[in-house]
Length: 376
Ligand SMILES: [Zn+2]
Image (tube, rainbow, N blue to C red; front, side, top):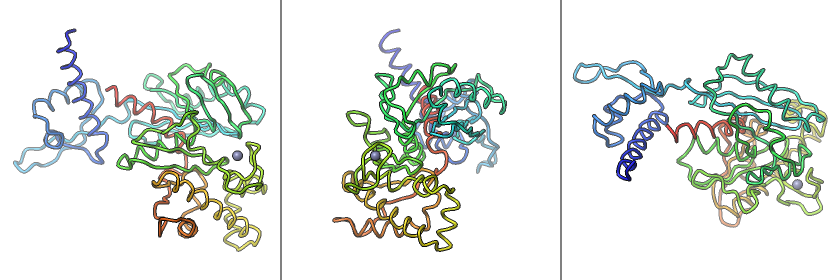
């Protein structure tokens, strides 16, 4: 192909992608006229591209609209169920499977209990459970874009290794131990980075953000211009192991005083031998020891958040499943954080996430949805 022909092909591809992306991002269906006017494209160009997208089955009609001239304008949207992606999260006691369509809507979910001893043979178990999950939900494998796997670990993709996963008690193992039995395209990412990505993806107007994930472990991600900022060793955003209390509580990483040791969901559930629901019920009933523990957690959380704000000067989004319980305490967290801060009078930069549940599985599945859109 000549250079000119290549340029024309590439330009056409970009136009097709921009039309698809426009329909993907639109909350409601759109007419041809709206596409042409909003994207500053000519009607013949829009018509040609829509025909191609129709033919490929990537867009669909979505009702009609009465136009001013009395003619009915066709409404269009993406064909959201033409493909799907699966996100899997591995934690110390569970495997979670989430299948989402191209609109990021959940089409199936399952969580499977895992024995600690199984972590070493996780690859085979994961693959078997994935096949069961696909079968049980009648999911068509030919539509499966890929399987994303979120792990609470520092991952080195180039070396194909998990450098460290304190909560899984894994160190320096090959990623292929986890992926070698999979029959689909796969992608492995840190769980908190995936969660942050899901939050950013649905609010792309947010240019930069720090994401602090509060689950059994505490992690995070820094997103700049929509991409995770990884750092030299892919350890950026490992907020859980910031020291916030010298000689403080012991952390799963072996050090003392880490944010994770103070603010993980485990501290107020597993470590007490109760569920999170039981903890918050007790807290509401003014259980004095729960109240003291909760106050300590909020104080250290606010210190950690303020440090993140000091280092990065951007919004701090609180994510992870503990966040489901934080709304009543958000004003207190903001108050403590604002008091600690040299520059800010308030801490409105602290926000709660959109996806307290399943963010990491959604985020890691999004990798394939994004790839699909980019290559449409
Ligand atoms: Zn630590």
